[in-house]
Image (cartoon, rainbow, N blue to C red; front, top):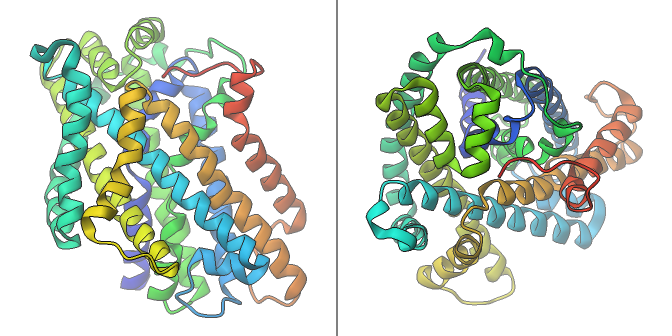
Length: 403
């Protein structure tokens, strides 16, 4: 495998593994390890398939570095560009909201002396301190991210090494406490396999080489799948389901997960290491998404001739998620669910539509994803189902997940 291909695979893996994995134990607590494993494999296959559809469509892209919004415009005109851009922006706002609520919750957990004001002060502090790095420069974000990423990796490995020996086989055999939880949890899990926004960059980096792009995607998505399985093995194997669910129902936040860790392991070292890992995962993911949204808003406003500076762009970037977090301080999983809805359109429904149009327009495409139009239709149905899961939960047709 060429160095560029390997590097692209690592870029896919690095973009995929983020704070979304933190919500997995919360949303799957009542589901059990077996059904969690099934959901992971289904979504891994589905999102790898949709990424390969982008590879197929890029064969006829007007330029190698064309963005996904440009591809959408190529096949669906201006409405396609608008829908692609809106879904991406709303997705980034939703996932930033999740990171702010999660980060504020973790910070409030170590500031009990602030009493009832701990959560709002923590939310505002988390947003302002990290937002300053975004406003200063991309270089400042790069330096901070590199440092925190290495510490995060060490903390994650330490947590796994400490928890895996404590696994109880009986805990892994727990069955779902409610029917159809595997469907209810899908939007949150969906965001944990999201890397599609970087496909244009990888395609350009690999000079449009279809074979190498396919290898990078398949290899790069397999790495997070293995990491997620080990992570779920550790959490489901250590926590007795009844005790875990009871704690999370009392505190359906990342702090609740840390409390459950301490009660299950009776180790302050493990719970502190987990808090460190959670915090760093949220910070590094926050910085990456915030920087992308910051640049995206700059490009959008530039296209309509609206002059901005870094301070005004910072306010546009951070005020909406900050307001959400202050009104919904325990909305970590809820915000991830909304992010999953938007990403389902951007990362699944949109590529299915573009691939269908490309196959009609160019019947002799050199590379086609296996399965034909029947597979396209099946993926579209699953995408529409996942997008509507939050509405089905509100209507009472599906059970709500913890959080």
